[in-house]
Image (cartoon, rainbow, N blue to C red):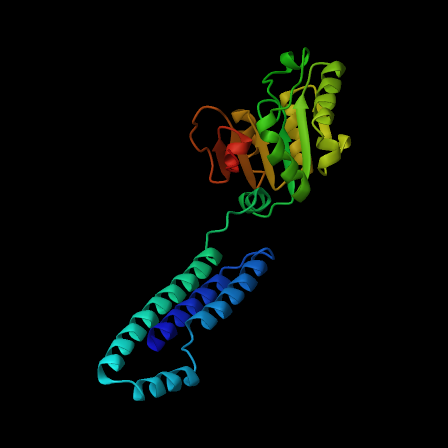
Amino acid sequence: MAESSKEQLLQLLKRLSHTISNIYDTHSIGAVAGLAIAIFFTWRLLRPSGGPQRMQQKRQAATSSGHEVSTHSDASILASGVCSSSADSRAQNVVDKFFQPVKPTLGQIVRQKLSEGRKVTCRLLGVILNESSPEELQKQATVRSSVLEVLLEITKFCDLYLMEHVLDDESEKRVLVALEDVGVFTSGGLVKDKVLFCSTENGRSSFVRQLEPDWHIDSNQQIISQLARFIKYQLHVSPFRTERTAANVFSAPSLEQFFGSI
């Protein structure tokens, strides 16, 4: 029993060392503290019982008859085995609870996927908006509900600029109203001055080169190809599978799927 306890404690210490070596942010400190508590209670449950109890069992055995001693001894061994098994089970349950895999938050995934990039430029059509052409913006502008959570996380961590090619001033107003209605300007770090509009597709490309972002996100493969040698990383959003045009260009069916939020 003592040898088994030592082995279990040794395994726990090894797992603690492995956990500490894999810490990548301050949120893991709580997990380490919880693990320390788990090890303490496991030690309490697994440590052998004290001397006085064993001395009392010996005195009882000395005053009993041979048959009674044998019967009592067998019962004590059985009870001791049951208690030991129960203690081991409780200890293992405590350990298992603290070693359950911790799912990273969306914010952590965003930072990891963006490789700690701090400035991001992103097209609106086909990425943030349901509409896919400037002509559609002359009628309406609607933010994709599934992308909103990811968009807000990006604004918390990055300096984000949204941009689009529009055909008239009314389209600009529709886009700004749509973004305002979903709370982008109040819940995140985005401001209206960082929503940029231009009259041509090449104008968007010029915006990106002037801003020099760490990441550019676009649904136009031609723009992606033009910027590949100027921008560190790019994400091509397309519902169709496309060939990778450069080592620094990634692709995904949607912005939210790139971050694995759906």
